[in-house]
Length: 483
Image (cartoon, rainbow, N blue to C red; front, side, top):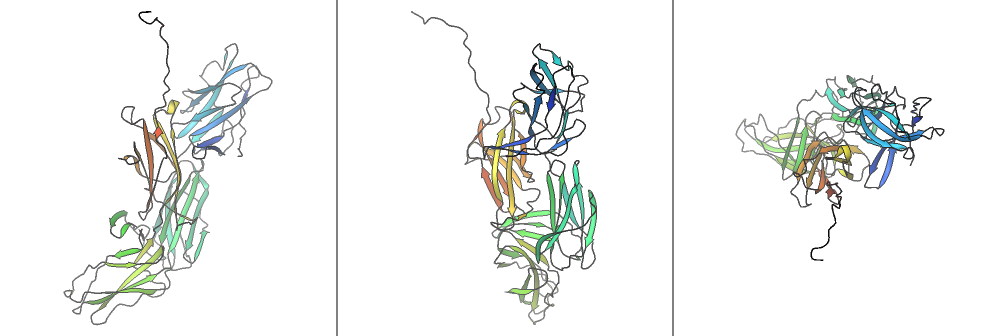
């Protein structure tokens, strides 16, 4: 395991013990693997520069001048109001060579140290005027990226975006697209900005998948994706969910694609301008690339429907594979008349993403807060949505993918910790007060993708949140009565 150490040096005075902060080591302990991994932070460890951390727990190492032997103790202080007030963060001896610190919130933390020698003299003697030797900005939240379809001319596609992030790294801005015939992401040359609009010709009339990916200075990733058709108008609307015998579906009209978690599909439709002969048959046409079309099935119509009546007859059919399909219906009258069959490059009436693959949960870890963090539970995980089973390509899980629950028994009943959260990889829970919560309980994470596929993982053992260590004290000694 390699660790990146940044230069961050402080000399207190020439006449007093010399202490050097050797930098910031960002450490995260995964109990699942019983190992410690270190990741570098951005920036230089100088007192006038800021280091950005996406983790709340990290270690601040130090060393002392070999020529100075009189240091007895080193005190670490932090400030969240840029030095107006300082709070103690821990003490260490020179042999410990570092402090472990856990932030209780996101934001800017200033750090400074004082030393105590063997005559119990403190340097500097007062907290007033204490200057920071290290500045760390804790940022655990990813950038919020919103990507929408924008108006465009025939044959082209357009997108507009908005990014909400205080510590955005614009150098990480990447707008890309891909087509059904080319699975590789193609970068677009765009001026990086928090808001903007861009249009281009993708060289296809089929569905175009677009994604915008950015990072903040703490290396949190933010991304949004959408699928659009060249020349199609901007879509409006929100998200809905429903369930039934054919499985669940979620429609996102902003993306122009409906997602279903079953290969058995039901289409609801209407027939307008039906003549006296009624409807003899409904032809279902399908495309996978927006270019070539094939007739998938033919369904019997209703020749007894009254003249001019709009009929509403759901049809059911099955597709063979996962993936994105375009469908168009062509009704045929009892007199044998019908509209034209879909032509090459013609937009389908609806795009459907058939997704039967469950999300994958790689690991789930729960850590009980101690010290200043008593009463909190730190839940971390790794989860993603593969394009197909076994694929290393991932899809966007959406903004409401994660739900966390707890229960005394794996058989339940389960109570909600939080529901419909983005897949950030971590959540900090302020537990109910003692006496209002069990002392041991299991934690469950549920992940739901846009199509409604759900996967869950439970902690293998109950989490003990009662960390108080009882201590006994002898009060007196008396002889046993009668002896």
